[in-house]
Length: 109
Image (cartoon, rainbow, N blue to C red):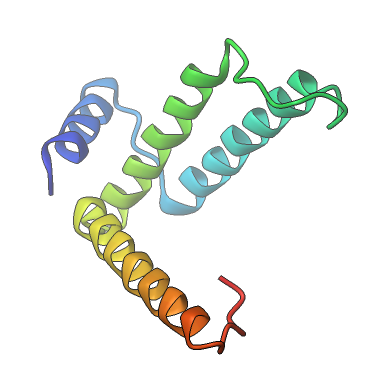
């Protein structure tokens, strides 16, 4: 567990705000919905270019906090997991570029 994940877990312990994984998933879904609502309002339903709304940072931070709590509740080392995903995305992107150079670009990524 990295420092940030430990910090989030300690804050939840101090606040007595640990929830079950299903409850955290629902809260994270609601937080994502708030970000979508902000984006919809900021773009006037997609009619305007996206500009980061003023409430974006706190809402995105809330979503990240909930993801870290969910990881803690399910014993996932989010730091290692995200690093693994980032590495794999890099490998996949390099493979895609190589196939594109060879004229075999049929991958959706």
